[in-house]
Length: 206
Image 1 (cartoon, one colour):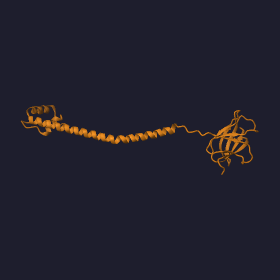
Image 2 (cartoon, one colour; image 1 turned 120 degrees about the vertical axis):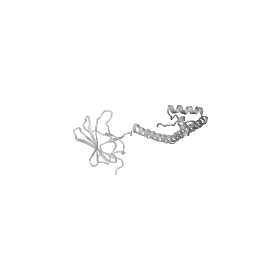
Image 3 (cartoon, helix red, strand yellow; image 1 turned 90 degrees about the horizontal axis):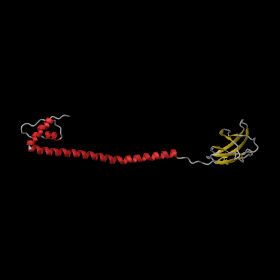
Image 4 (cartoon, helix red, strand yellow; image 1 turned 45 degrees about the vertical axis):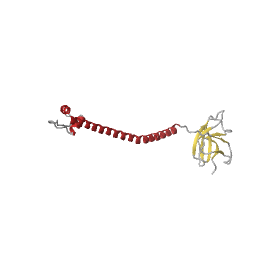
């Protein structure tokens, strides 16, 4: 905003507003020249100008100091909270990464030997919640390159199926863990003809 300052007339002294505007450079070049000429010849106004400059300088310095203290107070209030939030966020991120990249501990399968028995009194036993390694007895069965296998529950509902490939190193096939209960492992031909059925008790009998 442009400030209009009246030039001093005659030998009158400059007022406080004129001195303040002059000291802060808020007058045009023509008015500044006129005020400067008056100050050259008026010791009273020069002394008043010095006091005005000192007052303006002290006010500016006080304002700057107040702003600096306010900024310092904001930083002292904000930085600890920001550090706490950042630490919590990093902890959550580290925990999430550990869950994502950590490998689950592998549970070894339980070897289950399936032998031909009469009834369910001699059924094979296995604990619940553990993967199985089924080893059926194929003695007396026709020699085939593969045997389809399935596990059914007491009601005959299929819960798993797979394929057994006999080899010189052994005859076994992996199956998933099962819940507690009585099951039956069925061995069939590739055409679907049932060859043998083995009882399998998972967990304690109910």
